[in-house]
Image (cartoon, rainbow, N blue to C red; front, side, top):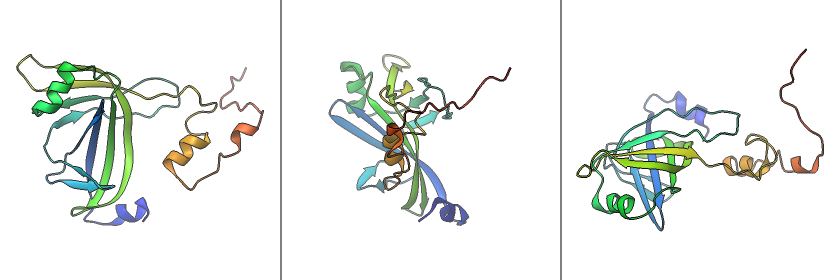
Length: 177
């Protein structure tokens, strides 16, 4: 079902699915008032995601990320951040379009890693996480013009399959004198 079809529906709701993978443990949360299931994974409605910054897409190779504030963390995830090095752990935000409790389509809003994590105080379970995007410097082209990135987003789209076979340099912008 196409996203444009979902946007035409009047009962469409949008919620975020939040994933964090620390070492060999994964945690799944949603800002929805009830649990949601996406790709056979249950996202808990624990209301721990207090806020996160807007994601801004850029054509430049940089490590801009987002800041996420988590509140009321359970002991398991809190202890993992205190006792282990959670830096570099994967964080993912997915925008989920739904009707009732059924997710009709999704959009990968952010996929990155933990850059820093600080608790508000020693006794407080509120955690502020700063992230950065994951960069793969092995890509020859930008993230919008290589086959692996394209097929990760659109599995059946092989538009850039032969892009690495060309020796032509593509200049996207030139200074005009």
